[in-house]
Image (cartoon, rainbow, N blue to C red; front, side, top):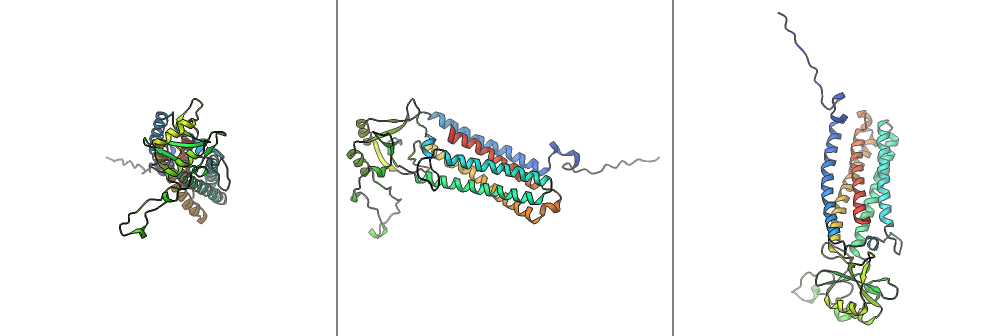
Length: 324
């Protein structure tokens, strides 16, 4: 009796027509990562949303904070942030063009578009670093009350916001640092603010045109401005001078805004930095003809998926922090 032997050809599940969802293994793993990381960013943004609406009556006004443009003096609300966003979105466009050129096996075009993508990423991350530095340094300075609230100052006649340097008095005895040369019992001391609390208070008392504005927003969505008498009374509640923003103090208002700003934009900036490194590696591989030898440019498409993801996340971060 003849026996029939059936031979089944081995088939790689990631090749040919048996690809799950028509994607290779590498692309599927990228998609799994994107989905999981999307949930992480969603959690962070939901946290921001809860904080934003819990303190809706005293939240920071973005147009008063992000007003700087490199090499230009003056107030340009949101201009530079819009520029950063435009650059990142355009880098996503160049990435699409790089992927398309890769599909057509056009090495020269792929190299050029990958270079533009890397350049756009570097401009964005450099701009974000500059924005961080400006936010940390601060512009005007403010005072902090016993309850952790921030009070700022403005001119009563024009309504223009005032910096501490515009009215603070200089009291020489107030500006003494505990220096190492003063004795063996030296302790590390943080840098003193530009003006002491007494210098600011005395400056306010000496200038009748200076009034206080508090964090609480009025019906027009603006900071509430106190009368001259209320301003002088409010000074009795202050405990220190605040310049710039960090994880403890924030001259712009609610300290929770600074915490979330540094954490979420920093986390996104880390993703962009990783993307730039990956794009640089792929750029040199394209330049060396690595993918020409493989017969496909799928790696360009895989890093492209990641890059589009970080671009899309920034759209949400931009909306939450700068527009809402």
